[in-house]
Length: 157
Image (cartoon, rainbow, N blue to C red; front, side, top):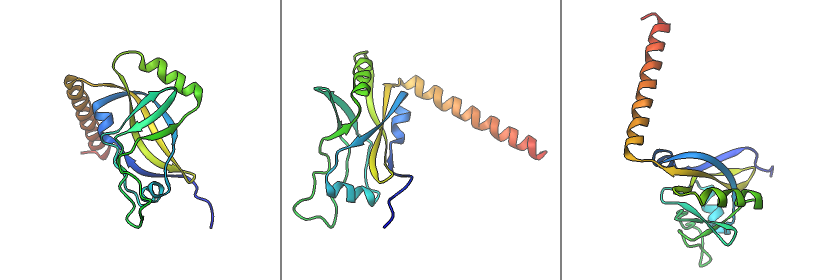
């Protein structure tokens, strides 16, 4: 059987980009158990309540829900267990420096398979205030309206 190639997205956290302004993103490997990988290959995961914490120089992912594998036996995993993320030491040190500043947090943006290996895209974000969210919505609406007007003009209407 040939090896998997490319990128297969399992889950994305669309709410993260709404609630946080993402400054930087990192691709991390994730340490999983066998039944977790099988459950992810079925396309089942939820990143909505997820966040990452750095403890003793290691990064851990909390709150991500990977449901139990239906065909699993007593060896099945806990759905919301803490999972270790795999990053280079330089990247972890960079994150520690950024997280010492107030207001920054690590949020999972997407969970996917890249060349057969499970990966998580972590975003370094700062929480948005409600007026920031309203400004983003207004900006998006105005951009959409301009695109519609340009489309109508190009069609000659």
